[in-house]
Length: 397
Image 1 (cartoon, rainbow, N blue to C red):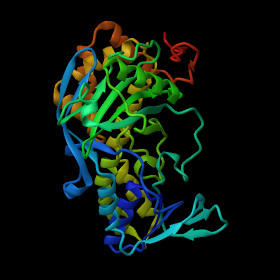
Image 2: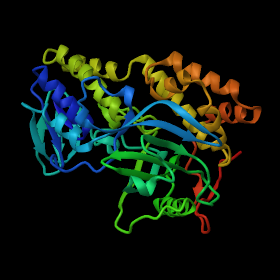
Image 3: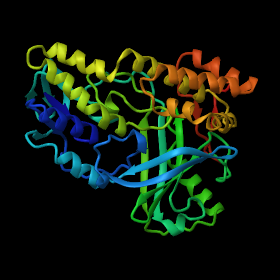
């Protein structure tokens, strides 16, 4: 088998397959390049065999919409170098290739340099850029963010020791327009990431708007940022179509309400590898179908659809209604919030959470949840203007 993409998902799957005796190769444009992203997850979602060296911090999660709530479970930020070392240790026997895959013809992966790699099964683990996925026909809803990394004592007015501020929807940046929130989490080693985040928007809220809002928010809280503070920029789709050949973010396993996918990929990798090993080399087609069944059982496909219907409702809400929505959601019992935020194949739990949210909502929010969610995908509907840069949503109705 050939895995396309050397990120956490690709490395986890390639290593799991090799350990089961499959002849495995991994191809990436630059297999040795450092990982620059911040990977996070709910601590209880992480695989039980993930070593402590792969986790940079564990914190008590809290969130603020109109009022402050404890999430009730731990929030974990992964140690990028530790995770990389753990996954690389499992790549013994995996053939590494440098190259950019343009597409596949059956079991033949075509490379940009004119070469090719052949395998019985090719898995796309190339992230949200998904080299083997179908071209997007419509603009994607994107999560965008601009952040800075500071010492914990500088971030103290916003997040204390042992805390992770998952969301703070208060408009402390002083701007109107599409709502954004502060994400403030410890990275380990006394560092804290402070990030102004647009959860989802089609197209994504521009990064200059987020940078400006973050600066205003931090000034509001008397947080002085050193001029040499490391910056982080985020932009990725949260509503990509299902990719039968995909794994990880290319599948996509990205949760549209959080952007998380790494913990799910690490957990699923051994099961996907086992399904492939069960049928290779006797029946490559059956092996591909078995792998798809692990990633996308019927219950997961149904949950995926429901989550994306919820995303469409959120995208059509008036800006002022978004924090009100999260005030209701964050007030749900922990079991409902946990089911919606983690249960990718928990259809009953997802339906229960959505039903509880509807039952606790006022009539105007109920109308916003049900009506827009039944409409087609929202088109790109914002025109960014001067002033606040927030624009006006053409689909607020």
